[in-house]
Image 1 (cartoon, one colour):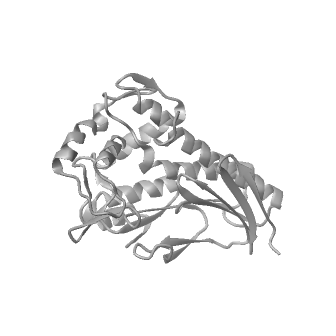
Image 2 (cartoon, one colour):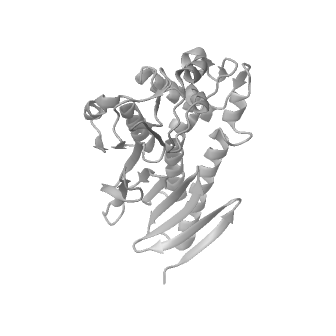
Image 3 (tube, helix red, strand yellow):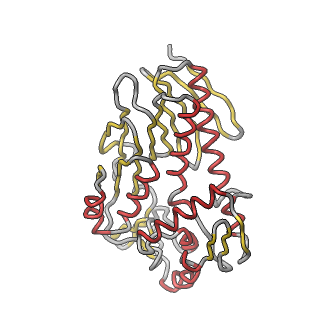
Length: 306
């Protein structure tokens, strides 16, 4: 019989089971199912300690950076109404990283573009906003309109930021580092809703098997990847889209126009040194539209396009 246990942590439950040759911990965070796989060189008590530490990290990052959580850093910034907000080092690092992605994407990616969700609802429906609705929001979009002198950030009144495009990948890498601190040298796979990081190669030489979801058959893998160390991230429209007039609109918006990226792949998956790096490349690739394949080829990373 497999050993198993579960423990309550606030509103969420953490479970731990023995699954063949590894321990598997599961919990919910960031509106996603989360998994922690741990090679079976540790005891059940050690495995529980690792899973608890990873879950606590996920919940901390979500509480701090989710725009939906009252009292979050993002909420404080968005409610400042034009006032200057001084941020801590972790938040400053995320802001700097987001600014770099904005520069690399030539403005296509922008953490101030979250206000466009007032016009767009990617729930699988058919409602397309008018150009007038989008034009009314575009004056509130543009990182270049913010004043950012670390650690002080000042947005124009009505502007907001949203770390949704980079937050989960950051949480995965942060949690993976915490897992390594909790059990140095032990191979762990951290998976937050399909964003994955592996620290340390397994002692038996085996690779972790990671499924890439099929863009048309949710829950079914289109590819099974072998990962010994590094990160995997996927960007796509399988769950968030609008279908109207025979056309599918992706939830990935070009911040310059306020409209979904045109002629982009249904899905892009990248393997890189970290989950954050992989996520950045998938996002930048999707924002290239029909040039996504060329961008990925030039990146030098392993990738899959659907």
